[in-house]
Image 1 (cartoon, rainbow, N blue to C red):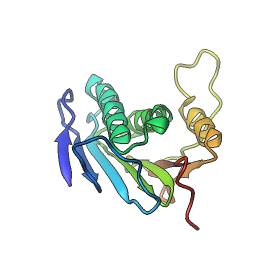
Image 2: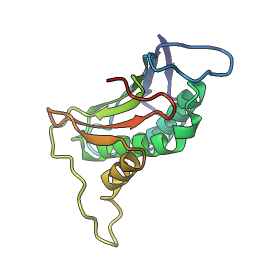
Image 3: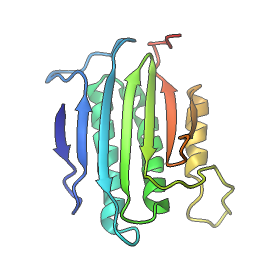
Image 4: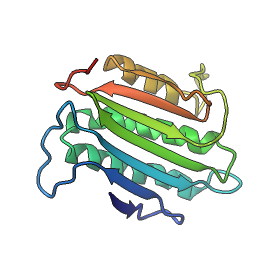
Length: 174
């Protein structure tokens, strides 16, 4: 397992990768590959801080690099957008001082993205007004999942949101 920290955050994020690591160009994973990346960080104690928001950018970069390294660059833009929306929601809707976790794993032809923040709240796509600055994130996640014949939802304990996308060319294992 390799560990790295996000460079721009005051409170560093811990990034762990599990699974095959190579120094050369990544080969496309096989259907049996199990590969995962875990990113964990704490949010500001009382309100969303600029460090929290900068961390979203750092995580997008980490995710994109990891996907390219694993030979999944064709999914990178959509996965980065899903991760960005789910991480931003976790930061904005947690009660401050929360630990946010992103788990991104590949298994049996599916890329699974799970973001948890430990805050048991209702997580659903809501209708945003035309002038609203927020409220479209889960609609975006739903649209990307539908476009890829994937799915999304919330964890059974209501502390997180997940999205799974089939990886083209790998197929699902029953």
